[in-house]
Length: 97
Image 1 (tube, rainbow, N blue to C red):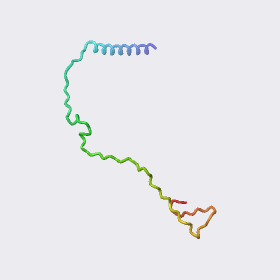
Image 2: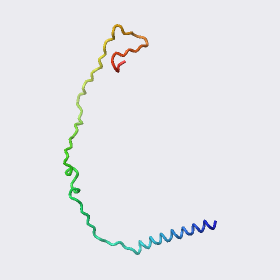
Image 3: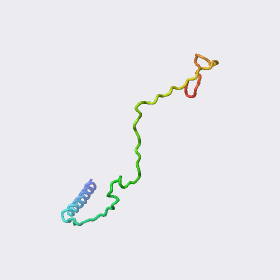
Image 4: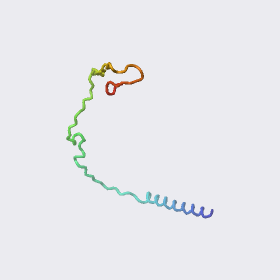
């Protein structure tokens, strides 16, 4: 137990020295003021639209006022020799059952 207390005391002393050093820096050291000049290129001062000469095309997003009628899928008449009724499925057109 004395070793743990000794460790904690040593750590507290080190933390106190650190905080004391930071406090001393804030009180005794004053920052110096000086003028700073930063050059900005003229091309960076222009807005993006003037700087970018590319033509942007607008997309027509209007929709027609009357919807185009959809064509109903054409159903071919059943051949005469096709089986009728029952549990059999006859595919007459691709994708239509």
